[in-house]
Amino acid sequence: MSSGDYYYDSYDALYATVGTGVLIFYCIFVLAILVITLVAQWKIFVKAGKPGWACLVPFYSQYCLFDIAWGSGWLFLLSFVPCVGFVMAIILNIKLAQAFGKGVGFAVGLIFLPIIFLLILAFSKDEYIGPQ
Image (cartoon, helix red, strand yellow):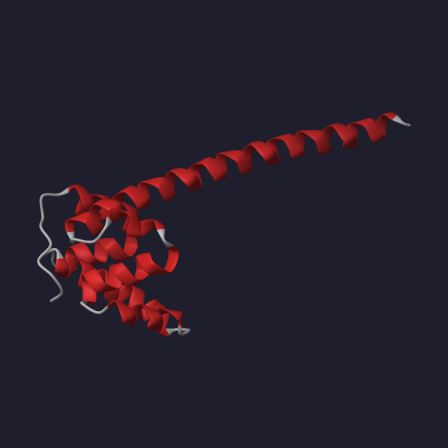
């Protein structure tokens, strides 16, 4: 074993350690965002008269969100159609803002900064007025 082999082995260990640290930080960050989003959705669901636990159930949460925003939860099935899903997500945010009496500016915020604006919607004094 030459000294050059040791040099490369120490760099491999360094990169593995740094990579693991970055991965752990990323996982913690993603979990924090997930928890914040779930708390916001829980509050929004309760404001709209839906059970808060509904935000924890994968497809049922989308059904409830479409029901809150559109008045018909079954429209969430359209979000599985390629290209239509992207448009449906944008329209859903607009409808969600309108269902709580917010304007187009708030809807744009929901589209581009969803976590922040979901928190604002969840913890504001605004009341659910229903699909518009």
